[in-house]
Figure 1 (cartoon, rainbow, N blue to C red):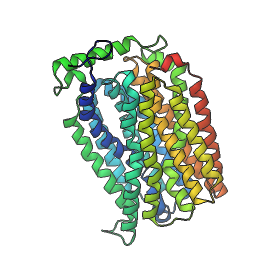
Figure 2: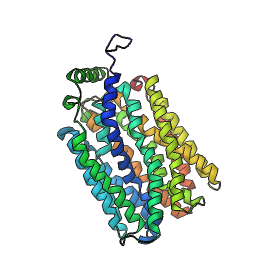
Figure 3: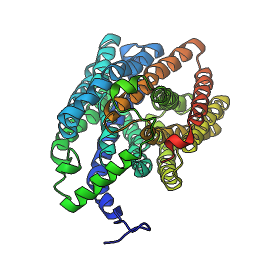
Figure 4: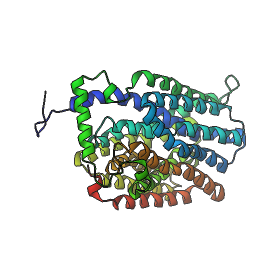
Length: 434
């Protein structure tokens, strides 16, 4: 047994065991979660013409997902806290996988809206539930890199999903297979694996440390002791109940900051294929490969920033700096829209900054939420931020229909991200640098 510099047991090997047991499978689940959420960006390349939908209608359909998401986020997370993570996450994944797959049967704008709304409602509790779940395993000083490694599934869903989606669209566009169009095959082939993974959750995850029989009793006791110590060191500003969460201005500020981050993220996720196509590339397979470049860079950058945040015990600048980077990238992409190479550099910087902002926000919440308030508080922050998922895609679509360009929308969204960085720096460092 090794000890740290304070003479206490070194728990790094135990946390490594926990990481290897939980994170790879959760990573895979979240990869398909994000893939199912944003694959409409590739389906759009053909679906709009087949169904005679406008860009505004597409933007509304892409965004209406988040109305259901916002409405169901808090009650879903509270339900997870009652019935257990393993059972509730499995139910969530199977249901959203079914609705996501059923998007292949969309035949008009109304059916598109309804299925996107239902998919959002069923998926609402997954991400905040996972964040809550991780707080029950890892103390605050370890959460930066854990969240970054887990959420690197987002950019990797672009790295893997872009070429995969592009290949599906290109392969099945040559001629209908079994009466299905390429975009219908896209929803089918990316929705069914989610159902299978959801069933697997019941067998592979443990509800918490106390039920993890794959750890020794000594290891379980040591991990639980660290969480107790972490909770005792929570700042006095931390809310201790959902009633305190609702009236805590710091929680709402984190929600607003998350909205600013997500405004850039969803603009990129839903419109990146279309922006690449507008730059002169029309082959779906090539669009898929090009869209992977920004996500690959983001997956590397995200993990490096997460490690740096934990090593330095610094949270604010590790969120604000990527947000400013994302804003700068959107400005470059818009200003140099006529130059495909420079525009691609801008989109890459925007993707790196915006996506890295996602995991860097959540360690800040430890300064304002105790264990008792975490379920409702995390869901409230997430639901507030996810409003951007409705506003951002719809806004970009409306601007494109009105101006025949996405440039103005990208300028304004860059301003939103820069404002979020300033809000982040207004948070007292003593509250969150843990």
